[in-house]
Image: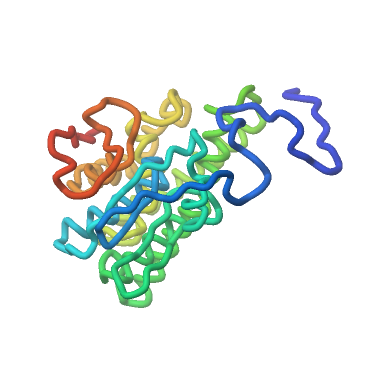
Length: 288
């Protein structure tokens, strides 16, 4: 196997063209690149996101809270098109200095504040509303363990396997094999756990499932990275499939996956969300 004879420089710099889908916006520096305020709605929560796996975590959680009758969880959702670099506006950088989606403004109290990183958003909302995160110390620890397991594994699936398999300008055997192996191991961890429990942290649906579902379910549905479903032999993970299909049937999940979605069939897109009325006429079917 001889993928490349590339020799890394002693000190890397950004002058070398990296290529790939996001080459035009990637830089080794942080901070705002343009002065632009964020749009603002009237609801207690302001979400700025995109319907990627990390973004869907937040919208599923908010829709699940609304499904339970928590009117205080109403939110305005605005699309941040990361392909266009809008995450580098001054307004967005102010609520997430890391310039990644999703980012949330909690304006429900006397003093508003930001919450960024999808895992942090899940934990914050769970604690605020007292839902989907058990109070029993042992069960709570199990839930949080699976939440942060996903936080740690997501980069291997997305930035690792997804990048080299689907987005890199050249296909090299070593990185694809490396990250495909790790992605399959991640699925095996989840499959073994779900062979013993209904949901990841036990018999109750929690933020552990909301964190992991958007990353694992698209492989089951065959809607991510083109031929990746076949490449990873997802049919081998029957417990993950059972779990993903059960969660996909939840009304809140069906709504949450549409919010800030700007690709695919038009009736399954929702650029902005301000109330439940915005889902009228949308195709919420997410069966697979």
